Image (tube, rainbow, N blue to C red):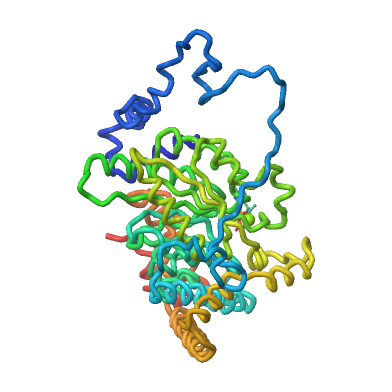
Length: 465
Ligand SMILES: Cc1ncc(C[n+]2csc(CCOP(=O)(O)OP(=O)(O)O)c2C)c(N)n1
Ligand SMILES: [Mg+2]
């Protein structure tokens, strides 16, 4: 099923016309030996073993030695966690620092993280006041999203889960774009059809967020395969990768496993970025899995994998930079990054996390480590930042968010016809009938239904010509 989804995503991305090339023929293409997977095919050509060899090259195992000692393989030591900065913002190993990041870039990353945290506070409150229906904050995870986005090309394709506001912010989604979606105004690219925080942008190569968990992961594997084919067809164009974000909870879905496997076997240039924040709503990781996090699964699928300190933006930036290079090496391959953090906030505005975890646990994490504070300390050590700049920036950002917020609050909602549009190419008879009935109801009970808030009012019910 997930492989089928990957194929569909692949078809869409390369723009194949369904009538011209049926799914069957695509599936056949995927299963045929192409020049790109020759290396993988060749791996098994030497099944015939030499006499007295200490191993047989079984077709199903890489290079397994014979042994007479009966030992079960057990859980090994945990994979290490890469970091660049220590909790005080100093280089953890001054002899081993990543390539210099310019002061401008460091400041952009810092400001983007702070902007997200300020918008989060304001919009969480807006939901509490009943002004928007739902919200999710990124508290504690801003470095994972901003840091990784900073190492991608602007036209790399991104699939996100929902706690990746920092990616949208880094890419150039504007305060007006955020507010149009959150207040479902007529300027929302999704025309108010999605819950708040389900952002998307064609222009910025950000696929629209979708609520059912993990469905974006096979889509990402398929889209990356499409990019690989495109790169073969247009070798002079700069190669692109896909970045796919998800939580450790989403990695419990079958889609995660199918996607990693197809990406590995097809050599798709996709960077899987898992945000491991310790919880899937109320389910702590201990009840989700017993292995070594999500990283150990990447190795199981034959995928180059790294674990990184998600509170250390320079570490996230550097692993993503190197992951991107790896993803494009040779004929392409997936890479898995597991970024460790802690979900400081409630899961969403629909959740009260103190019903299942102690306040002291959260307070302890807030005190112990925070990605924004860590980068701020680093900037101060380099004389790039101080308290007065901080104050000025925070006040300006608050004003920016509130200005966009007030503007969106007054904006009309999309025309009512958008309820029906884009399901079929044109409305069906049933849809026309339903819109006619809706018109009758709205005209009969004008005091019950205030449609002045909708673009075009009653005319918005008319079918688009
Ligand atoms: C298929 C599916 N099952 C369940 C849900 C309900 N649900 C929404 S978010 C969530 C937890 C996901 O946790 P994780 O992937 O770790 O992301 P986090 O919220 O921690 O960022 C669940 C169970 C869903 N949206 N889709
Ligand atoms: Mg989680």
